[in-house]
Length: 212
Image 1 (spheres, rainbow, N blue to C red):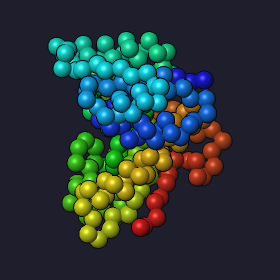
Image 2 (spheres, one colour):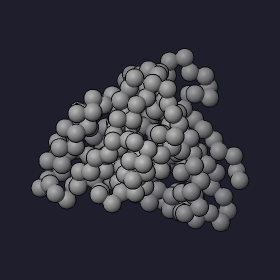
Image 3 (tube, rainbow, N blue to C red):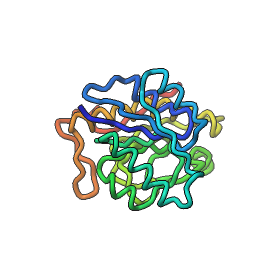
Image 4 (tube, rainbow, N blue to C red):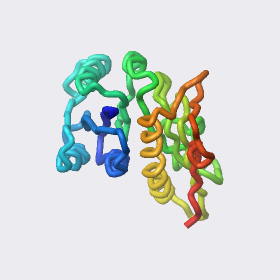
């Protein structure tokens, strides 16, 4: 059984998708948030999941907050840390501590459009495709070995909101699948790339959503 700690800052829709996936061999040990008002905390608590609030505003520095957060994660004997809308830039010491066992999902086809406003930037650039990327977390923001990517077509008349909605639906399918592969021991990082053991083409980390 692999212990998973999920970090959120809001409603945690990807957290919900992972919990509801019922991944064999996975135990959601805790859902933690840096915001006391994060709606996802109530959702998790209603399902009997241990929740932790650690308000970053109560710490003098980013380093102090990350150290306290790591202490609480380690108390859960976490095998995997999952960032699910956790709106904090993590310190290098924190990312090193969880190297190879911390995942994030980013709403673009990395390495394109790191950072914020990804959907509007894809529209402004005239892209034909947008999407999301599940990756292992490193000290460099929105980088790290790529586990899986999902693409959606950009349609005439799309706005950042409509594109975000379709991309989020892909995240809800791709992220639980990536966590499932980690728990099953199918992911290996070698020379900065993720290799899958015994993977079919469908499991190899790509997903193309049909046009609505």
